[in-house]
Amino acid sequence: MPYVLAIDQGTSSTRALLFDQQGEIRALAQHEINQSYPQPGWVEQDPFEIWQSVLKTCNECIQLSGVQLSEIAGIGITNQRETSIVWNKHSGKPVYPAIVWQSRQSATYIEELTRLHKSEIIRQKTGLIPDAYFSASKISWILDHSTEIRQQAESGDLLFGTVDAWILWQLTGLHATDVSNASRTMLFNIHHLRWDEELLALFRIPATMLPQVLPSSGYFAHTKAEILGASIPICGIAGDQQAALFGQACFQPGEAKNTYGTGCFMLMNTGKTPVPAENGLLSTIAWQINNEICYALEGSVFTAGAALKWLRDSLHLFKSNADIANLAMSVNDNGGVCFVPAFNGLGAPWWDPSARATFLGISAGTEAGHIVRAALEAMAFQSKDVFDLMQEISGIELKTLRVDGGASASDLLMQFQSNLNNVQIERPANLETTATGAAMLAGIAAGIWKNKEEAASIRQINKHFSPQINAEKRQNLHNRWLQAVNATRSFKPD
Image (cartoon, rainbow, N blue to C red; front, side, top):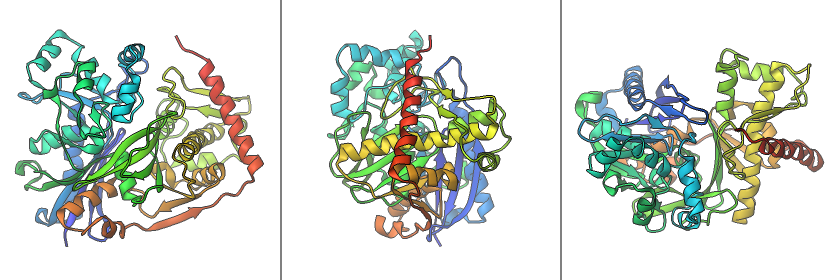
């Protein structure tokens, strides 16, 4: 039986999963990775720690599975998007830590381009709203960090990559990425499918730094034999949210999914035509198979599961994620507490980088359960704002929302989301849809499945959630959330 190995490199951890032809997970290994916060709003990681976590999880997963290396037909990679790494192509050493997608340290570059009225050019070419969230300004910031780094870049000695490209380079020596990750850099023209010279000039980024752009499903390169013990083909790469859209089998225009991870990301398939980005939504490339490009409309919520991690690690409200459900169910409701988790600003539909996290409605009777419940509900409220805007912009009424990610395992959260959105929620049996999407993309190229429809047959449904509140209750809940968002945005930190 052929197997496919999926590498799922996320913001908080790296996972390696081995899938069989029926889509069953034969083995899984996971390692958390650290983040550092050198200044308020800055988020960085060690590129070598990322790579070592990939190496460890892959070897552990293969060992746990008992599968022979010769039985692994291909490897798929999916990754945290926009996180930017610049390294010397001769020494292989990064010139600066990885700047994580959440980081705001390059915001002044975006402010300057906005002042120069370049926002519309960027939006038209890339489908993205100019923001420090994306890779372009992060690269500029790294290059301007020192004169030596800038000189190395101008001399052609430096390479840039999102995390997928960094992993691929370490595994194979090939400097490449796929169209889905390229479309998140704010340097890639999603209409002409190439790096854009005008945008490179705007951000003062030498073209020699950029990776080759390839289809999401197809042959990239073989791994170096000494790394995993055998030379295995890399056959698929996609950014994590596009991989989840593929893993959820959202193959038809109008089908949508929401992932509850470090952030929340809602994507809707828009077919062969990109929908113009407006009102806080983004137009992006979902994937490419052969010569067929699929586009998606996306709404990004910056902080979701990361807020629960903060409650665990910084406020010590609970010891493990297993305690979350018990704490949330220990109270009947949120006790009047509302939480707007804008640790790194607000994403769609607000795109307010200056907003900061706020608790409202705390009283002397507030318990840990109320705080945790408010944090869970914040994921649903933020997702509803994106959901409503997505329907408005696309003109498509969404009847079903497919969900995945760690927090989607919470029945409490999923029922609350169904109530707020007035839509049926569909949760798959396998919540590892990001890794599943990467495995499907690789498996199609490796010949495990004939096409995406055959690959989709591995997807099974675990549970449906239907709305259980009336329109008045739904509106009252949302109005209170909007009041909290407005209060949060009115407070401006120094």
